[in-house]
Image (cartoon, rainbow, N blue to C red; front, side):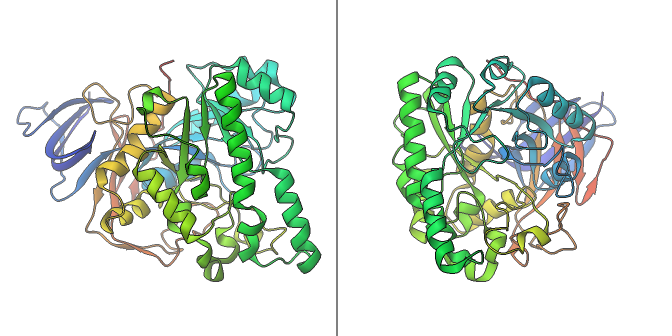
Length: 446
């Protein structure tokens, strides 16, 4: 059985930062102690002095584009970028081609990941207006959640039938994850701007079209429905300060029936960045005002917002550089999400302990993921070493996304990921990948 001893690290886990040694045997964490002197022969020793050791990041919202959209990305390419960015587990969305709206199509994605994924993985089952019977077959122990698009859907995945929504919310005990934007409000706003500008609408009007009201109307409606039916609701990618007041910090996360996520880009960018970044930062929901960004930070820090994710959603540069109405929304983030948040730690916006809570611990708690998200004896050894004194400049030469670009291009981050372990195996070592290692399907304690 292979073993690795990580010595002298500052281990960040469960609200503490402590100098500890960590021994890995096989796929599990075997021992954690101030000093480990006894270990098996042929143990690999890594000296992590002056470095930080954290649980692997669990990204609860990514779009890896496979099957059907593999000119943009694949499970292999994007999971490789993810482990280089310190993400050891991901949950991928159902809006691929074909969409994962039947159990067979969902399992087809799991089969691809079993062969191709560098990181641990799960997928969400996609709800539609007419697949309730299939939806109810979803195995809670083997599938992360149900995903509903209550706005900004692709294909036929917009769930806008009120009767169907009521049935879904009332019929499943699975977590229901939702994208909330009100389509009627958006259409009216878009039609108004098209009457002025035609197809080439200035990108700075994106948050006017996909407005605060569009987000609030939809998210407040979903929350009202969840409270009435008792459904377990998770609201993806909050983008407005107004929405944060719909959520509570009065009870522990484990007791919450309604939870919220914020994405790295909504914490980093605001509407002043459209002048420089253009459609490269066109996301749905839109990046909004500085006031909204500040409100998101406040809610994240006071625990109304529970999770930080990336909503990694790559498109080709050619696609993104089209006029406003044709340029797709979304961008690649998994390689740089953690180091971007480490920058916020350096700037004093968030503590390292709180960042680990939101990116590692809470996704594991929220989705009830088995034995991941923490540095604990007996847990899977999904761990990441971060050098906080190793600056890097994001450039085309070091971007790993298949699409070949990043909204952070030209940005200098003060930290770098040096080592990523997946299930006890060192998969990423200072830029070198062990391509023989594959992730595992996530299991859920439900």
